[in-house]
Image 1 (spheres, rainbow, N blue to C red):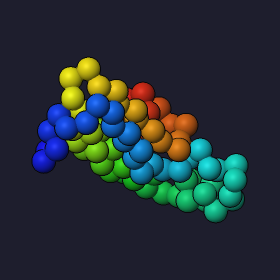
Image 2 (image 1 turned 135 degrees about the horizontal axis):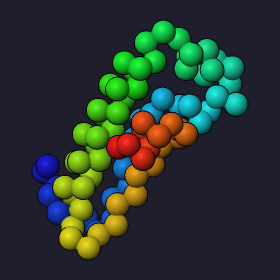
Image 3 (image 1 turned 90 degrees about the vertical axis):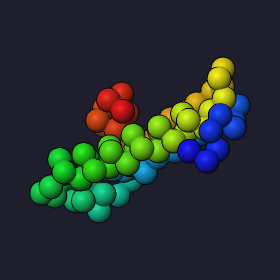
Image 4 (image 1 turned 180 degrees about the vertical axis):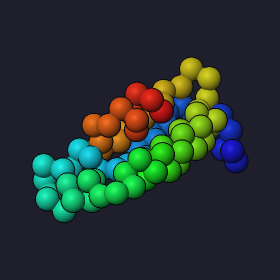
Amino acid sequence: CRAAEAFDAVLVDVPCSGEGRIRASSAELEHWCTTGCTSFLERRRELQLQLLRSGWQALREGGVLVYSTCTLNSTENEEV
């Protein structure tokens, strides 16, 4: 990380599956229910982990890190 321990606060607003937007758009629901959801979620989760690690490395000791998604899925929230 080029910005190691450079920040007092870091917001990691990761790209996610968009599951939280299903009620807003029927197109989101169609995308969510297509074949391959599991592999899509695993790839998304891996990217989220990489971004979270990078944010953590950029954080100074005693700093605050906020992790944000637009999903309700525990795979992309609590499990990360």
